[in-house]
Length: 112
Image: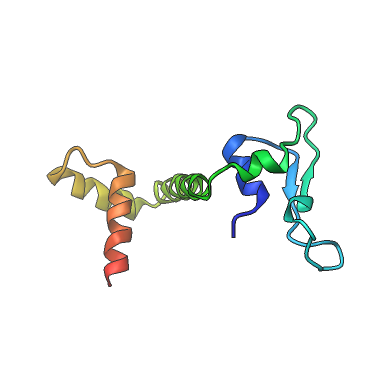
């Protein structure tokens, strides 16, 4: 589910002092999901609902995928076995980037 916070993060990727509540304090859903956006950032004005609705779902999903891969790459670079396997693979394909190698492993895993 794409939230208004997800849309904010497309516009302001490094913003702080902003959060999103999925429901009201008593657990009931908001009449308008935009109301769940809690804006405590004093430097950047809160975008209007119209501005955030203009952010495409595809842009939100693309940003989430980039963030997922960056996080994955950072974690996997600490795995010495994974780095060793990558180095072996790179001998036969010197142009291979680490992220592309991990992408290929994910594709193989999906085929299984």
